[in-house]
Amino acid sequence: MSFFEEKNPEMDRYLETHASTEPEILKKLRRETFQKTTQPHMISGYQQGRLLTIISQMLQPENVLEIGTFTGYATLCLTSGLAKGGKITTLDVNEDLAYLPKKYFSESEYAEQIDFRLQDAKEFLRETDQIFDLVFIDADKENYAEYFRLIKPRTKSGSVVMFDNVLWYGKVLEENPKQKSTQVIKELNDLIAKDDDFENLILPLRDGVNFLRRK
Image (cartoon, rainbow, N blue to C red; front, side, top):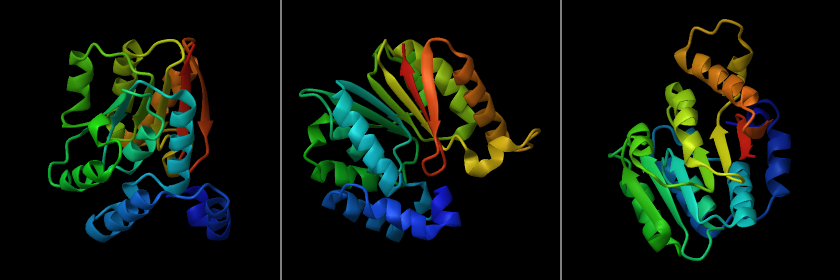
């Protein structure tokens, strides 16, 4: 959920009505996510989806990695800018929900470019030798810092990496958080801010996106 969605829904509606139109396949997927999942708020929002789409179309990446597929909304946004012959590898561990992204991936014009895997992301990153142009992480927060450490060697100059939920409903302002996820998100944000190999900015979009570019 976004800050404005909770605190100022009128502003949230204003932001949505002044963003680019959501493609029909994404409207259908968003609707079905709210109908058939118990935690539909986990879906990348309308505004965030437009951001992912624009970034992908600007970069025209050949190799994209997504950690945390959920129902595939962000995946389809990221595929929209893929270079000809490019691909996106999207990872999740929820077997019960896999039918939903598979359904929409197969309907998408990018079906042949999507590699959907039910696999632990840490395992994948330790095994792969691929270098990624664009990475989006929206998964288990307790592993965020480890994902950053594992992803860094899999990037090159110009690679863009995005971590979602890095403001964690404002909990990052807690000085001594008891929640493990809050501790790790704060650790991640500190690691990124101190890493001279990246330039970054935390975008206050929805629950916060840490936007990084490899120098």
